[in-house]
Length: 422
Image (cartoon, rainbow, N blue to C red; front, side, top):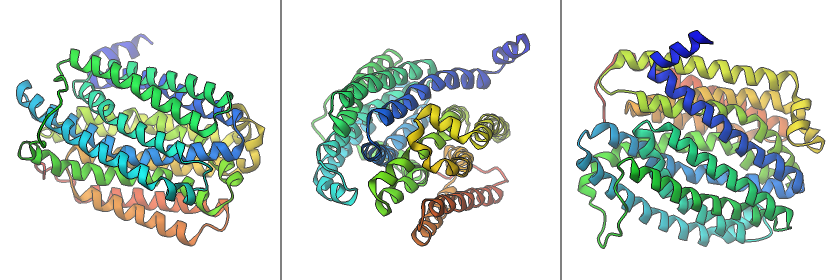
């Protein structure tokens, strides 16, 4: 233990990983407690609705991830705080305008979404749209803190969000408000988190928001928009890959089956979310001017991910029924045989996500092509192979493996260090 503490003190990279990982484990615990609690309070069909909405939230959250990565890139790129803040203000204004447009689009599309996903009400989609909009200022403030390596502050914000969401959502569902209550809890938690994160970020030097009476200065932020395009494509691909099986099952199978599958999928995705904290620490540490250090950081991150994710995969493989019963209850045991296979697919996607994020941080555009082809292969496999839940899982495994292989091939093309392309 003494040697471990000395290594933490001597390596800022390991220290940041330890801080962010430890805090993220607590956040992940609260986030995943949300699912078992709702899974026990709601019938499988209702729980399937919540999971479908969360899956859609992951897709729309791509925009938030783009904002986060671009904001971190701005902080790493501009050494002058005044220049950095000027670009940040323009990005925020553009993002809020885009968020308002997205809110309107989601609300207008609610009737179609209700029919496509077999929901009973439009209300959850409207609340979902509001949560997406609130996520914009939250993503910007959190990214500013991450760019300055204030990982402890980010953990405090995420803990607040997760705790409030759990308490309010569970309370409203218990009172009989169903899927709408679960989404309202997310909205309230997001609003509180926005205020808290904004407070911490402004204390750290982030410019205070002011309403502008003009369009954003695109000339000032145009260099960052090219990078934003790269982040958008890769983030969209990763998020869709992570949720496409839940959406497919929700569309192709009855609501009860979709709800049961959603429970198993939620457990399998623990692997992705407990290894996820290694990604932002790696991205924040990457330097555009030091390839040798970058490669060492990548190897360390892969080792940490493999150690933790691999151990979780083994546990899910050896005791799937026990884990399902503990987390969600015996009513979700119908598809327990799929948990080891689903967990393998998610582990593969976790490795691919780390590699993709690393090369995005280095602004290598070619990795976006590999990611897009990997997602396309997954869509094609699901389109032809969805006759049963087991077939869907098989498609996910094959597609995620194709995704990872394509990314590795792209990396092999980029072995020789070169200057950033963007």
